[in-house]
Amino acid sequence: MTTRKVTIKDIEKLAQLFDDYRIFYEKKSDLKQAEIFLSERIQKKESEIFVVETDDNNLVGFVQLYPIFSSTKMKKLWLLNDLFVDKQHRGKGISKQLIEISKELCKQTNACGLVLETAKSNEVGNKLYPQTGFVLDSEHNYYSWENN
Image (cartoon, rainbow, N blue to C red):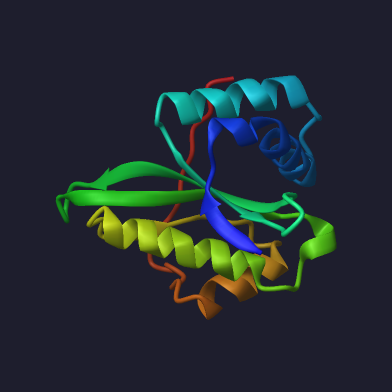
């Protein structure tokens, strides 16, 4: 299996994986909109997306990162927003591969770190992230506001 940066040529396969990711998070399937959304991110260079590809050219996992900034550190910071592995390929270390390539991006761009959030109910993620060097921030509150 190969870990690599996605290209626009991957959009159809990536969109299917992204749609499966959204379904996992209980969103309605929308393959067409997934293609549009991902194409825009790639073409506008608004995110970095890496995939794991099998020897027979199937995409089995992806990570999507968005650049943000830390004012206090006065550096770029990467938001690890999406991480997903196809259910038939889980337990093979693919998530760890995707996290490692995310760390490499962080180093290559001289960013000060990676941040992410996951649900308290995400047992797999809450075991995975500390194993890969992430530290749970229990001192800060996380708030959100949605414009519905």
